[in-house]
Image (cartoon, rainbow, N blue to C red):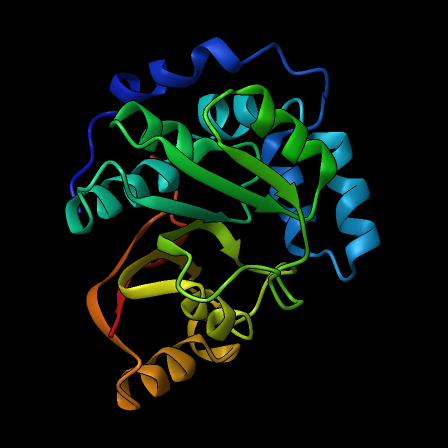
Length: 229
């Protein structure tokens, strides 16, 4: 999928950035994040990284995955009144780009209270909540028109198990646009889970493409769009 050059859309987030207080290379943080094994360590890790996350990911690493997911949702669900659930919202990067495109009914969830704090400070969400995606969501059936996720289905974070819950809260015709880390697509059962949901007539695949997560570098993932039937 073609996306604008990085300087074009990175300007959307400069207002939120500050000079990083951490001296560690951002790639070290990413590697450590992939190695997290339990929720307590994850919450503590993102507490230390939350305020520097945007600058290090966007400016230093050229993280393009959020804008790609935002564009995919806009392509497949251009209704700007759509109610969008941001899965593992982090600091709100993906929804920042959606907000720029005119989406206003944005709700986010993340395990990290500090990442939620940063996301809330953006002023773009109707609601941002702290929550564990590996537990049942306290959300009514068919309550959302779309769900999005960039960087949540990855090493040390969330596996394919919550997908049933995610599609439960989508209305018929609702869209899931998400990334899945390349290494986990088969090894952790994402491909099998999505195919099972397709085979049972629960969802249909609208887009499935392997692409880069960053403007530079070789790290890739699957960019997925599925519609609930």
